[in-house]
Image 1 (cartoon, one colour):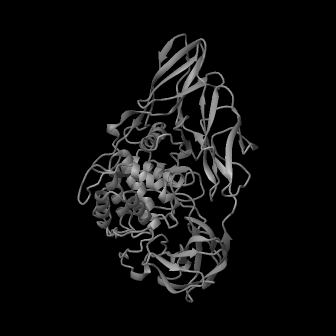
Image 2 (cartoon, helix red, strand yellow):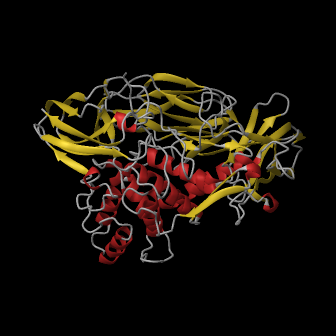
Image 3 (spheres, helix red, strand yellow):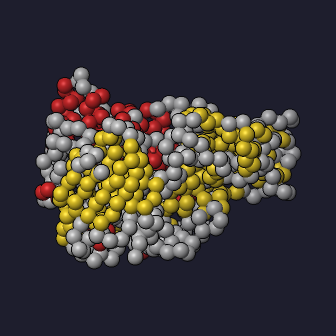
Length: 631
C-alpha cells in the first residue's frame, strides 16, 4: 500500500476551539511515492466588491484575464522565482463600478503569489441628486457568565462597521451607487432624484486606497451566494430621507424562528476589530482578500456533503464557520473568529509551518502546531482586549467553555504547549502586570517579528524562532530582555541563552532523547544511527515526538540521496524543507525510504516519521527508532 502524509488538507476536529491551520503543510492521506515541489509558480488573488460588469486584468502586460464575479483568481502562466510580476487592469467594469489593484507588483517568491486583491467601489456623482442616509445595525448576542452560552435576553443592536451599502434599481436590480458605513454604522448615499430603488447592505467590507481590504461573508452551501439584507422599494424624491436597517438575529423565545440575518454581520464585526488593531500598527497596509464561509447548514461533521465542514477553520484565504443551531454555532464567538483570522495573518503576512490536527492548551504538541494555535488564541485576546476565550455550543447555544489566554498556570508547560505560547504572547502584549509579567510591549513589536524574522527563518516556525527574533530586536534594552526571559522561563522554556533551533533547551516533555535535541545536526556523508519517534496516543500525528527533525547545511551544490531505515515493523517517510516549504518528499511503503535530490548551497530541515506509528490506523505503538544517512 502507498500513502501520503500531506494531502488531505488541514481540516481536523479540535479539543478546545475549532480551527485549522495556516497554508500549505502536511496532513494524513493517500500517497504519491517520491515527489518534488514545483519550480515555477502562479500569480493570483481575490476580487471583491464587483457588483456589475467585467474587469479585465493583465499579468506583465499580457495574459488577459476577464473576471465577472467576486472570489479567487489565478493567471495561467507559471513564473520562475525571483522574476518580477506586475498585475494591471486593462479594462474597468464600467459605471458605476470602479476598481483598484492592490499588492500588484513584486518578485515571485517560492510558492507563488496569492495576495493580489482587486477591490471595487462605486462612482457617487449625480445631478440632480437626492440623499438617503441612516444607520445600519445588527443584533449582537453576548455570552452569559454562568454557562458560557449565548444570552439572547441581552441582545443589543450594534453598529455594522465598514460594510458595503448599495442603492439598486427596483425594476431591474442594477447597481446605482454604493458607499461604506463608518465606525458608528452610519452611511450616506447621493442618488439620482425621483428614482425607485432599494437599499441593500452586503455582508462585505471593501476599502480602496493606501489602506485597503476586501472581506465578504458568503454561503458555502448555496454556491457562494453573498449574504445581505435589503429594504423594500422607495422613491429617492428630490431632497433627503432617513432609512435605518437592522439585521435581526432571528431568535424567537426558545429557538431560531426567522432568518439569521445578523450572523454574517457579527462575523464581519470581528474582522473589523482585528484589522483595526493591525492597521494601527502597520498603516497603509493592503490586506489580502479573504472569504468567510458561513451557513446555518455548516455542521461539526466531516464529509462530502455541503456544510460538512467538521469545525471552524482557516484554509487558503478562506475561513469556514460553523452555524448549526442547537449543535455548534460560532458567529457570536468573537475569539473563535479572530483566532482563525490570526491564521490568515500567519499565512499571508507571516509564515506558519503548522501541520494542523487536534490541539488543546494541555497537550504536548508538535512545536509548529503549538506556536500557531497559541498565537491564534493570544491574538484573539489582543484584538478584543479580553483574555477570556469563550466558545458557545449545545442546545439553544446555551452551553460552552472558556479559558484565559493570560493564565500562567499551564498544564504541561513548555515549548510544545499552545497554553505556554498564548500565555507568553499575551503577557508580552498586555498592559496588566501579573505574576512574573513586568513587560507591556503592545502589538507592534509582536507583529514586526511575525512579518519579518518569523517569515524568513530557515528553522521551523516555533516559540524558539519568535523569542530569538524578539530578543534580537531588544538587544540593547536589558530591562526588556530580563522581562522576556522571565516570561519564557516561567513556562519551562530555556530563554537565556536561546536560539531559533532550541539548542539549549532541556525540557523534553518527559520524552528524553525522543524529543531532544530538537534538531539533530547531519551533514552530507553523515549518518545518524538511531533517531527515535514516539506516539503514546494511537491515531494522533501532531504530538511531541511524532516527528523528528534534522538540520542539514549544504556548502557545495550537488546531487545527494537521503535514506531512512527502520526495523521490520516500520514504514519511514522523508520530507525535505527549505525556509518552511517542502521541496521534496518520499512516502514509499517498506522498512526504508530514499529521497534523491539535487541540492543548492544553503540550509535544509529534514523531517522524518514512521507512518505505521502515526497513521489513522496505526499498526504499531510506542517508539520507533530510525537510522538516517546522506550520500
